[in-house]
Image 1 (cartoon, rainbow over the protein chains, first blue to last red):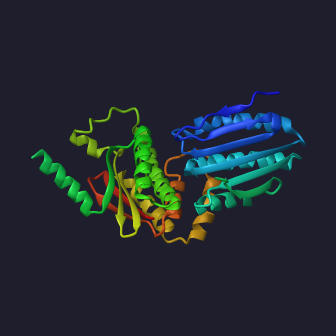
Image 2 (image 1 turned 90 degrees about the vertical axis):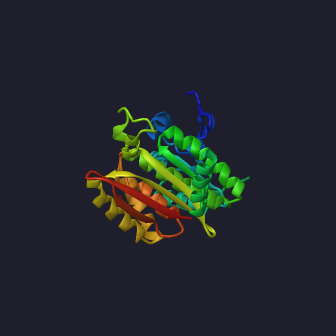
Length: 129
Length: 189
């Protein structure tokens, strides 16, 4: 079993918690890193490795972002694409997008990402305080 | 003398409705620091969550637009901010946040190259005249179209600003010299 990927939240970067043992992956907080590419590189790598070994297994990915800037939106799209590709290859993938009920822009952004998922199941939910 | 000058500057800003201002080199550490201060300021103002996030989001995109635009000059020796030459640097920007009645306004200004003005203007005109729905479609297209992370002038930042704003964005240009134009952008939330 690979080691879980855990990145602590900072003021400009989200917390990342890939709990492989429970097939539950999560990214939460705010995302406007100084260097988007550098921050997301290990996250992409970890997700690629995990999904590559998942086969027809199941996993859940939670996005619980308070705020993301436009370059992070691109990174989120790439994460979504990877999840969708795994689902297209036979995995059972549930993607959850949690939004702050007081910020409908984040709800709208979630909806837009959700529209692109055909094989992965998309869930749009309010954050619980 | 000193108090008079500062007081004068303070009144000028206040008369323009400015409640928060930054003028100087725009860098990522500046964005971090000013961003934190801005968040606290908005919390004190008791702005509602959506307004707070939108003002902040627009602030981030405006600062990053300046940083990205001037990215190629990074590494070069910059004149000290006190020198006159500093004002001719594209990374020397001004950002203000103010109130106009019940709205928040975020303004940003920096130098751009004259040869880039046409393209920038065209892009801004297009975005300004778009409905929220069309903006949403274009935003998604652009997200998919441009694989380069944070490439210069990806346009995504400007679209994010327009989406978060509650009124059409405003912009203006002022000639500086043969090579440079001062670009000003205003978003109302």
